[in-house]
Length: 621
Image (tube, rainbow, N blue to C red; front, side, top):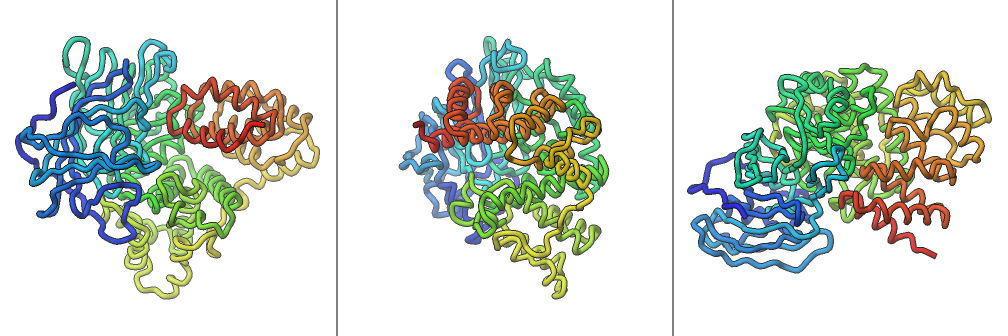
């Protein structure tokens, strides 16, 4: 293990406020931040690819009430060796009973100490970290490590208070075997690394802005960097760097567009890392270093809305963060609206309108799944719906975005943009709640206009289920030609291959998603053979096709689906395809269980845990 950071005195660092209101309480954390809370984390860790563990020390600076003698941290499977104060004196500590999904409380009796040093290693099963063998990487030569901290997974490798409302600055020294490069979601102090003993290099990082703990992220592997602009660049494996850099060529312009909309980018650099395909999400907005799935690489920039989304999080989510997971829409809904505005600025109103219409479709699908009166269709979620894994994407992302789009339509873009920019400025580096944004809307957008207040239906949007009466519907002209093509095919017409060739990705997705859900084998084969759907290179379109084909037991789609599930670990794709197969009786269940036995070891725990649940909920005959 490495030595702990040697900092002789507490350093004055920015401390983000803690919200004391009842709606800000985070029931997914054991912490009691009003009594004692972590303000800074200093990590000094070794990466051990042989044992698949991180090991070393975490030094925590603490802000506590005068009478506080204990601090409670979040912990999931950490193996604690010792805990001492800043002078090296041992401190008593206990690990409490496990709570399903949350881990265990780690209570440290710190006395008057306001710095504690925890020597530990991660457990054998670490929810946040995925250790890849060389065979699971593009280069096939070196192992790879990647993390995913949101929502509450970082407690499995960092002993801290793992709550989005307890913002913390951090620093890290990470050692890794040569020739691996380590990157993290902070300022890179040693980009090339420095000697750290035989066969190892150390990399140092720092984040001076207080951030939510889930935004501490790490990746290590055979990765290289290419500049995209003065403050933007991409990291990825050498075999992927050309394709990634080409797809991301507009990144610098995206940052400029975002700044023109809602104010300065406050994080220094905006770099991205394109990870191996096992990464469980489309993207993760880790500050200074967005994590991206390679599935967005289509060769034509048609899926770079994903990049715009993660960039927008630099304002909504990273700058202003939901205080707890009941208000996830404050991160994701606001970001989804912002994403669409960036896309409009760079690629024009037509593309933005089409992507907004697809978002509306996703929202309507979520309402159909849950029921319009379900509490899960509220923006402010309560009870189990507000758990870290609760809520539906079609609500949190798409209804949230539609709420802001409706406000913009009613108040006018200029007035709305001025409000949203001041929201970011006035709450920068702070946690927020639904109650706070409601109060801000009334104070700074409505401004006492009772007629406007009645038109906006603010409380209905945030606290009521379903869709308020004033919702801004998408432009019916956005996909009128596509819907006509769907109707013609559904009526028995031919496949319009020439039209398909000229359609955008959004138009192709609308077409596939609007096709009849029940289709005979002949019509499916006609689609597949005419449009080359089973071999299409766009992963979003391929997923939409495979889901439709498998739901109709179209045998020629089985092999492409198996290949897709073997090479992709993104939960958005993997889970629905397995669920579709599991819903097809013996035919689909046999395929699903056979394929999952082979593919499960390559999935991140975020993905495999979800599929495990689906498998367990589908008993075998």
